[in-house]
Image: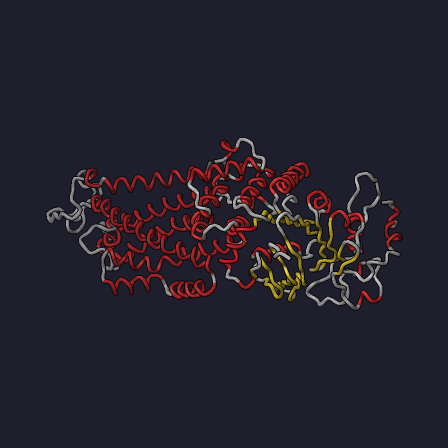
Length: 265
Length: 336
């Protein structure tokens, strides 16, 4: 019961933000990129609930449109490594032997690099932009899923139900898909929830470092970067986008916790 | 002479352990033919389960076949690739495990699990596979299969689970069913039901059974032949009928005597003193000699082979000499 509540609260919080992002043009009357140089750095008013930035753009509007970019990239930057990592983990654990040694050595190599160093290097190679961020995070992120799933496969492989299925002569593809997969992915799903937070954090960090989504697209990381010069007067310019990251992280943690309790029941 | 369906020849299995190389099986030979029913009995660690696992290619990664051959339909499977080996095995054999809940996939409906082999190995349509699954459920004594088809394993009782496991094992129409203590985890009444089912399958469908257990009564009830295993070898081999009446090996004799008799009230049950030998050490002499009532000096230096005697085979130098057996029989003051 308690786990169900955490799950629902998390889904509710995140769902509200997702809806706001989807229906952003209906919620706000402003264009996120429209400059109004007569009204820069305004404080909260009835027209601009969170004021305006140094170029006179409505902060609330940019925040909501920023959710579109950050959530979409965050999700995509988890889905791709998830699919790659789970498939390779399944295969490497099942086949063992030389395939396993080769794939696991690659995994070790990727893990040995600090995440940001590798991601930043890759973004430099591919050039800034949404595509290269996703490619960079995917190339770095799949290893965790590969390891988790492989470990679960190694355990499941020695279970009697897998022995039984193999003894009945079912094709390996069927055993992997129907017998193995549903029994080995729950841990990786839970991990994916916290991984979305990490990947959003990575996108925001890359944006802050100027390696993310090119300006003027509204994005939380670049908003923090643009706002940091005004931290003593208009403190909310940098703080509110940061709080958005916290909000997303919090709701995803609730979902993750709820899923753990539900899947391990 | 025709080729036996499965022929195990001089099979030896070694397991790497922390305490050294354990010789779990030390030269086991036997044939299995369609319609056979063989009970392999022995105490824990005697190698009976490992024998099954070796035949079925289920040995754990730290164990390997160190000598011997296993022929299925005349083909030595120890030299085949795992894939070809499994194909040959799955056409001829089925297996049921001790713990049915572990042998069933927790996330797949039981009906689907039974229908899988017809659907994905035998290439039937979805409807045909379901019909086959339902008839198999009926065959293993599950009434109302249609309404139970969509249940998950955890929703069933222990006896029903083992019946489902049997139905799955039968779904590829095997000639031989390997059973690794399938009734040990069940309570006595359910145990009797499952044994009755296996006996019916044997008598009505001509299904061959290899049954591994430590329960002599089960072998007596289900099997025609018995192999008694001790320290990784067969020490006695014969028909259930003769062996239970006239055991030819002192170990079999003591085992039979150790089985509690519900008609006799005794203060203490008969036990075999001592313990099974440590198989990480080299075996010198007969491994049973230290515990044997009939052992002679010769038994301590040389290990006897499994040789024919009367209607059975026995691995004992003194199997013809029963002078000490009567004294052993009256030990503990219990008349047999």
